[in-house]
Image (cartoon, rainbow, N blue to C red):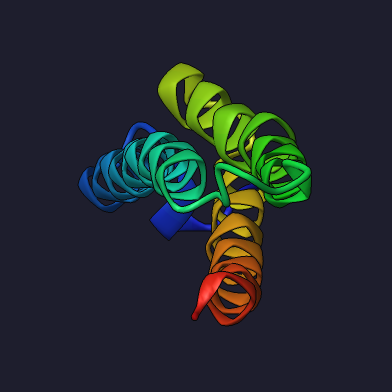
Amino acid sequence: MTHPALDPSTETGRAARWTIMALAAAQTLFWIYAIYHIVSHANPKGDGFELVAIMPMSFIFFGLALPAWMLAREGRKVGIAAILCLAGLLANALLWAEILSELAH
């Protein structure tokens, strides 16, 4: 039996699903912005090693944000979707802080 807050048939469960999908969509937009930011701040005369930071951002998107959005959209395993979404938010915040410190001049 699931928790009432995560049951898709209740109003609270529907709100939880929409919240998870909104956070996953925000992470998608952040992923696109991060790629743009990294590419635009890469050293044009350098070796392009700054572009390696796109890979972990993509892992976070494809491994955490996208599955969370898909699970929430289908209404299955909303608790796991919430955990994946929050893990993606935390991973994005930590990685973004590291990327900004590396790209700072």
